[in-house]
Structure formats: structure tokens, C-alpha cells
Length: 399
Image (cartoon, rainbow, N blue to C red):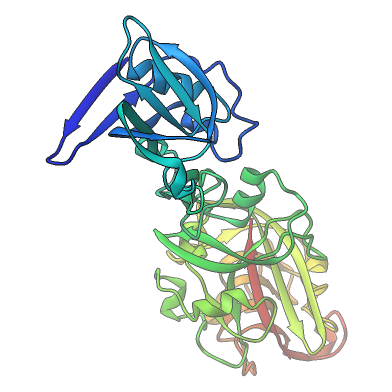
């Protein structure tokens, strides 16, 4: 046990007690003094005492023993210490402080020192994690500290800000253990910045599991996310506020594009009142790392899955390419989706395909939109036997 005394020009002594003992008394009975009062800083006033608020007394060897007795008692929040005595001193335990008791209970009393805890030392021990700020909760009426509180950054939560920082919607589920969270706007730490995004905590029809987070929303009639748009190859966000608004018609590109690793994509299209989704199993460090360099990367989910996204969708009947940064003869390109042709060959789509379904097309004839579905050339080559030109508002999510 180590004791420090500091003196001033007034007759006040600040006594800091660092307790190195196990507290034997229960503090649960006294809501005015929480468990962290096992350690406390006490202020002392010489020749001063409280009366009518004494709940117990002890005989101790010194003022340190008196303070220790208070810390061990569940109802004690201040003490009167009799400075006379050899070898033992009278220590009176009080259930009020000079700030909370009536004036008539405050008396000048020779050979007594009154001590009460100014504040606990818990905040100096930095209990708040992830950059949270510690502060004390005071009871002005009692004149004591009741508790401490951690003020957490927007991307953390919990008693000690221990939950987070969350970097994905799945992160929130994993760290809180709560698998019944509602869809809603959550704050995530993305690229060292707190960003509010819509987290889809419930299953999306067509995309099983939970914790989907938006990456992009694309308008087929705008060239914001056309094939050669720099947004595919840079780390610049676009209209971040639309990341909070769910499956609507506001375009966005979020920092999730370059910051969030994923194992699956959820892609969807809206046409009129129809909004459909499907899952793409694909693992990567970020969507940026998959798309930005322009290198073609293949995967397969099948034309049936793609066509399920857009009512009435049509593709040419034979060869097909699926993946990212797709490239075919005659300059046909697609950032994400499927390209199909009517010519079957060992080298897929060598004839110059005239149909696609996906995001960000380039040089497909007669297509006046950026995202959606088109089957051009001759209707007999389209698997619905009709030519189709269907612009669709697109959604890309990851988890």
C-alpha cells in the first residue's frame, strides 16, 4: 500500500490511496458506491466532522486503515477519523458526505479529520476501448460519483466500447452475437472514416444469409458507371448518403468498394415494380481489387440465375461468358454479368455476341442504356424468340 500527501496553503490534505488488498465487504447493497470504489482518491478536512449520519465505527491504526474500512463497507461513503489514540484510533463510517447532508450535521471538531472520496481512479485506468472517452456520473444531491460512462465513437458500442470498430455489416453480427438484428442504418469504419450505410441484416430473397452491405447502385440511363467511367478504377466515393436509403433509384458508390473483403456478392436489378436478386460465390479482398485493373475474371452461376433477375430477359442461345471485365470480339465488353452469342464454338463467343445481362456494357449495338438486358440481332437467335432491350436499375452488395 502506497500513500501520497499533497499540501496547500489551506488546511486541506489530498490523500490518494492505492489499495492493494482484496475488498471483503459487498458493495452491491449500496447503489451510491459502485464496485470501482475499491480504489478511490480521498480529500481530507482537518478539525471537521459529520454527525447524525454515522452508520458504523471501527478502531484502526491510522487514517489509511480508516479509509480502507470505508471502502470495505457497502454503505460507507465518507469517514470521521479521530487523530488521537495510541495505538488505535476511532474511525466513524458515514453514509452521507458534507455535500449531501444537512448543514446542522456539519460541525467543527478538534482532533478529527473528515475524509470523503473525490472520485474513483477507474478513468485513469482507461477502461474505454477503441478510443472511447471515460467520464464520471455524479449524483449532485449525494455529492458523490455513482458510476463512469464510456462515450463511444459512432462505429463502436458496448459498456466499454468493446464492440467494434465494425468494418462490415457481418462484423456487427459476429461481434455482438446478435443474429436477430433489424435491417437499418449502421455506422461502419471504412477507410478510417465513420460511414453510415444500410445493413441488410435479414435474408434478401435470392441472396441467403445475413449481413449484406451495399457497394453500388447504378442507374441504367446515366453514364455515371458506364464501362469506361473512372469510378470503376479509382477509390473515390459517389453520393455516399444514398448508401443509407436501401433499394431505391439513387445511384451510389461507397467506400465498401475498395475496403471490404468478401466471400459472396449479391446482385440485383429493378424493373418497374420487380426487384430480383441472386448470389455469386466469389472471394476477394475487395471489389476494387477484382474490377479496377480491367483483367477479365471468370465465374459461373448459369444463365438461368442471370435471367431470373429481369422479367422477360433474353440471351442468345449458345456460347456464354460470365464474370468481371468481360471482353468479346467487336469491342463488346461488360464489367459484371453474362455475355452470350448464337454461335457455338470451342473459343467462346468468337462471332461477336449481341446479347448481355449485367452492369456497364460497352459497344453492344442498339443498346441506349448502361445496365440491364439486351438481346439483339435476330429474334430466332434469342432464347425467348424476341428481341429484348430492358434497362434495369442495378444493385451490388457484398458479405
